[in-house]
Every structure is written in C-alpha cells, then in structure tokens.
Length: 610
Image (cartoon, rainbow, N blue to C red; front, top):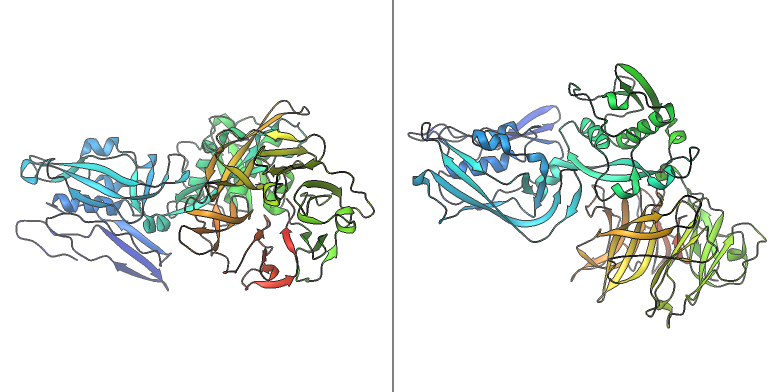
C-alpha cells in the first residue's frame, strides 16, 4: 500500500475503508499519493455502499506538504468520533484550538487544494494551500442544515518543525469541509421534538403539541447519545421563537455519562444532572415524550425511556402511553380523503383502503348547490371550507347532513380567477388560513374557528405574492408558494402570535426561508410528515418532477415518488402509511406504498384533512 522511498518513511494511504459484506471484512484504499506537486481535489467517496466505514490513517513519516493537506482532508471524512487522527496532521497549538464541531461545509465535490505561490515555499519551511470548491450547504454548531451557494475559498498554512523536519498544518479554518457524497455517507437527518409555545399558555390541562426540529448528526458516531444531547441543548435558532422544551434550563447528561443504549427490553435509561431533579410527574413525562418522539426512528428500537437525576428515578414513559403525554400529528390518521367531483361538489372516499367510488360528503358543501373549485377539511373532520368555482367566495359548513351553508365568510375582489382566493388550509386550533391574491390588495388571512372577521396576518420581509398556503399540523409552521418575477418558490415560515390566551391576538409569519432553492417553478405542494413536504416543480431548463424535501431545504434519504405526468395538485397525510394522492391529467390518482400510480376516479382538488 505505497512504496518505500529513499530517505523517506513508508508511505500510507490517507484513509482505509471497510465494507461489511456477508460477514467478511474487506479493506480498500491502497492508492499511493504523489510526493510533490499541486493537489487538484479530494474526490468524495461514492455513496453506493451504505455500510462503508472509513478509518483515518495518521500522517506518514516525512510526509510532504501535499500529503499532509490531502491526508487531513481525507481524515475529516472518517468515522473517528473526536477527529483524533485528523489532529495528528496539525501542530500542537493548532490541534488545541481547532473546533471541528462548529460547522460542516458541504461542497459539490471534495475540496480542491493548490499551493499559493506567493505565500511561502517548501524550502522556506512554510507554505500555504488554498482550499476551493462550490458550496452546497452548511451545518452549524446546532447541527442545523441550510442550503448554500457560491464559491468556497479558505487557506491552510503549513510549517516545518526545525528539529524533526515534519510538516504540519499550523493555521486552518474552524469546522470541517467535505464533498456532498461524503456528507451523505457520514451524516443523517434526524428529527428532534419540542412543544408549541402556545400550548403552554393554554392551561395545565392542554396537551402539548410536538413540533419537529430536524438536525444532522454523524451516522456512525453513537447517534442515539448525540440526539439525546441535542434535545437537551434546546431547539435550533430558527425554530426557537415558537417552541419550548420541558427540560429545565441547564439540563444535561452528567460529565461521566457514557454511550446511551437500550437494554434487552428496549428500555433506555437517561441519567440527567441535578438541574432536572425535583421536576413534577407531568413535566417529567413531557421530557420523556420529547425523547421517545426523537428516538423513534433511530436503531436500536426504544420502547421505553426512564429519566433519572441525583441517583433517583424521576419517571418513565413507554411508546404505548406516550400519546397521553403529548400530541404528535403523524400518529393521527384521517378517516377520509376529500375532493371535488365532476358536479363541483365535495365528496370523499375512505383514506385507508382501495375504494374508487366516492360518496357525497355530509353537509351543505357536499349536498347543496354551491359549485366549488377547492376545499379544505378541519383536522377533526367536523368542518369543511370551500372556495367557489369563480374563486370569489369562501364558505364554511359543518360535515353533518342537513346543515345549511349560509353566506360566504370571505369575498375576494380580484379581477380574474387566478387573482382571487387560494385553496384554504386548517391549522390544529381550527383556524382557517387562506390567501387573497387580489393584485390591488394581496393578503394572508386567518379566520379563527373558521368564522368571524378575518384577521390579516402580517408577513414582514415577504417578497412576492402568495399563491398557495399549507399550515403544518403543529400550528406553528406554514408553507407558502410565493410568486415573483414569474418564478414560484416554496418558503417555510413560523407563525407567531402576540397576545394573551383567550384574547384576539396579532398574528404574523416570520423567518421565511426557502425549502427548494434549486426549483424555480413550484406547481403544487403538501405537508407529508412532521418535517417533510412533497413538492411538484421544475428546475431552470428542466422537466417537471415530484420530490420530497425537508423543511430545512435538504433532501430526505427516501426514494422520490414515481413519475407522474401533468400534476396540478398533490396531497399527503402526516401518516406516511397512507398513499400520496394527486390530481393529474388522469383525474384523481394515488400512490400506495411500493406500488405505481393508480387511477381512482374523475375529480379535482384532492385533500387530506388539514
């Protein structure tokens, strides 16, 4: 694995990759590196092997500057928990001050590295290399992902020890940098959970609503312990203003806590410091619920969490009883799928089976004479809202047979159908959201409990006109399709409410950020889980595609939906066991798990409750 060179130590590869295949351990990575010359790039490891483990290799004796830089960059992509081998490429002082946990910069390909000719030479005992690339994303110290664009350029400065003659990196940027495929192999997205702040203000008897907060953790570096620490450290900066944690401020794992693993009964015992001692039972169970929700998708399975502090048990909670402690939207399955039939009436079919013949929805919107173009059904499936065929009027009615419809609760004065009301959306508190696209008075509106005077929702820093609205089941996040200059982009924002519980409050949508920066024409979108959406759109110069996206702008590690032609609308349930449903050139179609798209019936505007 490299040849001996005269007057120099034995050469070693920068890293070793181990593949676990059929119980046999295979080692790879035996290419030797050049003795001198420019570094043109550190190629990312292809992602096709999900079980690849990469082990960093320390610098070889008398390694040249190019080898030191190459070896260091390769060591950053290893599974070394504390980057101990990567630090061996640094001087003693640099190893002490370098903090890899501060950030991860993701580049399209591995970073290129070239010596700066005007910044020292090898024969002077000092040399500087420039790391270059094109940015894809960054992950900050809170493990929060954010898409990024533009050129990357940072320098690393090397010095040669006068006594030993060994080259080491003396100055470097904080954090780590790697190519996109190495990032996908090394990191995974995991969702942690906090509680909507507004449920804390509603009283002791109000069940808290869980809110998803996705973060990226290192895939093979004890992710369970990483996630427990992450939950205890609090929400990410973006979500922080609208959520709360039940863990008292300062709660952490004890300094001597090792790796956390469940026992043979799938019970995870979590020791906490004294900050958590003395909490009441209800609060403790909320704390345990946060951890159970968070660890649900991780392996090995966790069926019970026991919290301890000061050597004493605080409480325990199981997966079977967690729903009594807190509400999580994805565990509630709707009874029906709703849409508009060929007679422009509200109809429905069972959400969980293969029915293809719809029944009229009970109530005036399904049994009356009002022609509809779009609908929304409250999450408890007791109330429905519909926009008239011309887009001017919004009606709200009970899903009970024999009920009357009454006058519209809202009217738009937009000059054309496309300048009037969007499809409405219900939040988890029976608030009805809709956007009026009137060019002379574009507004985002909220009708509390679907009635009364509409409240105009402030949207500071919104640049463009809202074309679609979908509120998350947690009631604190909102997805908006916004049009400007002929482009339609998907933005995710936070819903902030100002005012005391029980009083009419001011509402605004803040901290808007793009979830699909690479798409410029969004046709349709829907929430498809706690932190995921399904989106139909196209890239610049590309063809229409359907894909899943995370609220942070990353791509989830799940297969994209099967291709479908001419999609105009799409809907998904928070419960991912239910099929994706769309309105396309073939009418209403659905995509059961593991199958292809299947035609259901003729109709438009399909929606699950929400």
